Length: 94
Image (cartoon, rainbow, N blue to C red):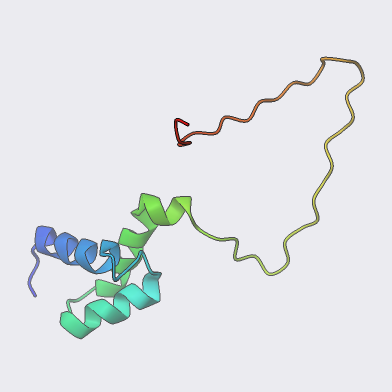
């Protein structure tokens, strides 16, 4: 395949970001890519590409074996000591 980094980046983007690829994980992306091409160091480059993918990092699920129990927030000592707001974006205008 050679050492053309722009071609490698285009292939990675095409396989990983495509609607059929659906931002699948490292193993699925690597398997799809190996069906098309191969180059030396491909495993590390696929892993690096997926670690840099902002969509995958934003929507990564919790893979811990046993998630810890929820911890309650401390009860405030006085009125108006603790105030919080939730900002919800992307809602429809109506």
